Length: 238
Image 1 (spheres, one colour):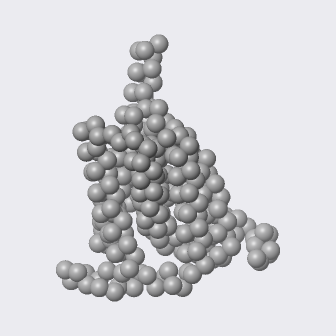
Image 2 (image 1 turned 135 degrees about the horizontal axis):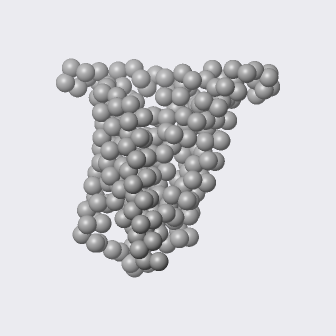
Image 3 (image 1 turned 90 degrees about the horizontal axis):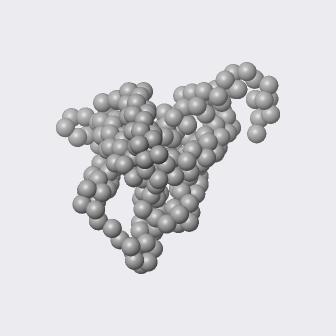
């Protein structure tokens, strides 16, 4: 590690900026993991969340260590409807379609009231949830790191920013997952977020970038309204 970076103001500035951006970009991942683990028992949910975030950290660090290969993912490899798509575009398309399918499936289950209470179903569900977390971690990791490449010159700064951001995400994920578990109505809102994020990823894959600021602002406003609803219900019961 280059210790001279400790005395460079530009390195600290890029660290703070990149850390903040990684935390914001990690919101998608936190929501997805929180929704998935909400159907598991508390102990299994905590394990799945820990595994998911640990894998997200590993994927991001590995991608940073192979930056030259990662940058090559942005070169067109296939043409669809006259538009060149890179491996990154194809990964975003696949991830977006997966999120749309998963959110729609979970919404359907929630509306129909389908439940699986036996032990074998829980075990199978845990395995399936971890597998799904691995898939979507890979998608979010590629999107996050490709977006962050231009914000810092040194890999050491990028890795440190990712580690700090994942630590913050780990602390936040427990609170978010707990809130969703205590207030089931918020799960439908979180699924709507995932549906919106999936559509944005598909659009990105086809080259139509939707500024994430719009999406996160809508999410923040909807979450604020839902918090007010939860508070109002609690006050009525008191």
